[in-house]
Length: 156
Image (tube, rainbow, N blue to C red; front, side, top):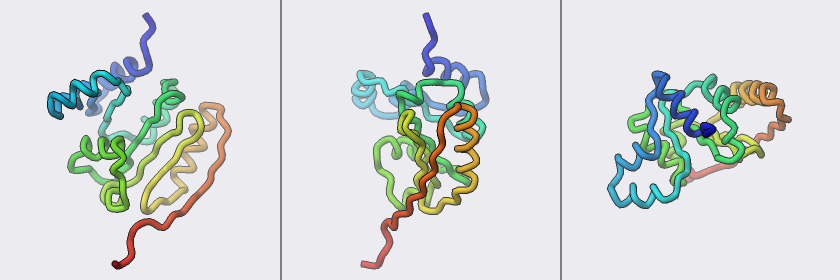
């Protein structure tokens, strides 16, 4: 039997020093009903703490499921109080300006169509370098488009 990208990633994380949770672990942290409901629809979700740029590059190079699964990363410059809750917030769509200001930036891929970074304050220089590296390593075309949207704020 051929090992799936999900199983290979879990095995690699088990052999590393990284703290991570699989869907099974996530379900055990929630209530029993949530676990039963989620066990019927497997998303292949893995939450990993303390990920570095090199890890992202490695995962995009090594595992091919990113062409079929949307990877989401929460990039924070400081330790998060409850990283599991924060990562689940991203998956649940509860992201707003206050969340981004408290946690950092979100990097996600749209399958093989592109990678997007969302944040309240972003310096594009470091991200462009990583994007160029991934593009070269995977032999993919690179197009960088910067959009700036005014969000929230205002006095009411």
